[in-house]
Image 1 (cartoon, one colour):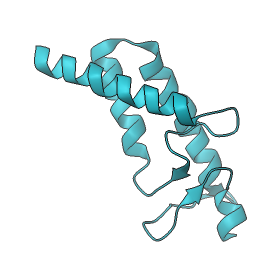
Image 2 (cartoon, rainbow, N blue to C red; image 1 turned 90 degrees about the vertical axis):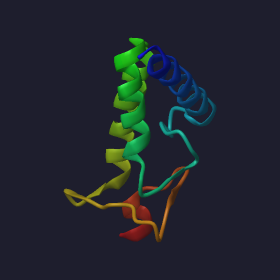
Image 3 (cartoon, one colour; image 1 turned 90 degrees about the horizontal axis):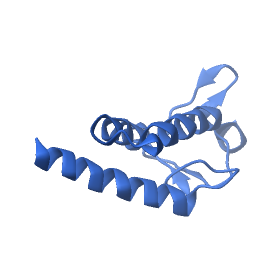
Length: 98
């Protein structure tokens, strides 16, 4: 269990580092683009919180998931980002795909 806890801390720290490099007031995400497997990143940090109790592991997924929802909801529907297209920094799904 110590190995898993240490690994979780290491991976969580790296995700937080990446987030802090990329995120700003207008873009609350880990990369300068959104792809089809986005929720896996936030889920990883939530699991990290279970092992670390680091508030960043709890708060960053909340902010970033809200950001993801804001970028992918159009006309009261969720528009899933597929592997055929990505949203880049500053884009909204509705702006790009209508």
